[in-house]
Image 1 (spheres, rainbow, N blue to C red):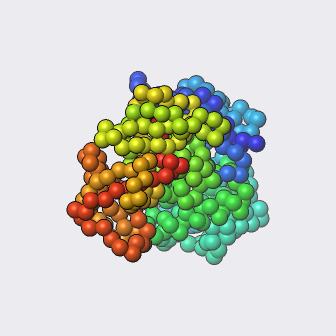
Image 2: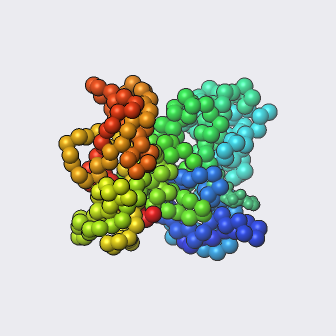
Image 3: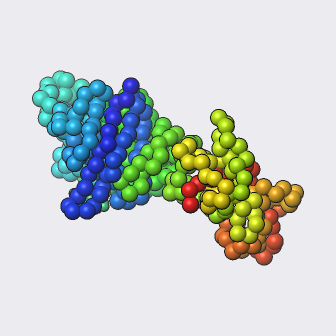
Length: 363
Ligand code: ADP
Ligand code: MG
């Protein structure tokens, strides 16, 4: 069952700032679900709406079967952990965590037991009497998590929870948040602008752009099978080449595959990922190939073969990043795992990609 369902939600701020544009979204129970997108695309607005801190102009929000669109925050079974943590610096860790329980009229032994249990859950046992300002950033982050968990929400809402931490701690806490969410059997909606964070932690990702949801899928689906140019480039580096369709290679249950010809005459052949679109002969398309799916090749393979010159090489040990310029003047990136022999700047090369690794998108 879906824990949270958003149906045709719209929100405009002021006269013309469209924060959410006809958003539909289903968050299945028990999933760690990500809202991913650039700053300003509407992530926080959508999260605040699930929390009940913001009202839609139109549309509905359901928790399970229950329409909660008009239900106030404290009567929804969702708690939000804010980007700033919003902890009280002069109070102890225990007092901060217990606050949510007091608000709900819980006191005595139950209050103490549940507070200690929540602290244990985030590995802060024994910290209950410390003051917030005596803690490191990472520990404060754990307190904020404990405070959200202590009320035993069905749904945990996290708004860029790691953005105040340094890189090392961020990596550590990614795994920690996932562990906690799974251990407590929670449904969590997690907002971030960091695609790497989303790819490494999420069960599912909704990629947002300009108040809309462009694609929902597993990390592999949105990375490997992006359905729009925006999703393709937002999820990671990619090479895009334009071409005009000259042949429908396949049109059956296994997919829609087309061949297109670039300006320079290169043959671009790949899979159309947007199921609602069947580009026809003569139509312009874009072929997207990730740098690590491209190989140097001089076998004379004609499909997805592009010739060019090495402009730059960045040695990174495990991988080598090359920047090429194609005959047609297009810049291309190639990422190679630990090769035996390096290509030199100035060298003429050819690259290819397999049909099944090339995604054909609307231009
Ligand atoms: P994100 O979290 O993805 O960065 P937000 O949901 O915060 O995006 O904002 C989406 C858009 O709505 C932005 O253009 C932002 O400036 C605008 N916005 C958000 N909250 C308000 C508000 N309270 N008043 C006016 N505009 C707002
Ligand atoms: Mg935000």
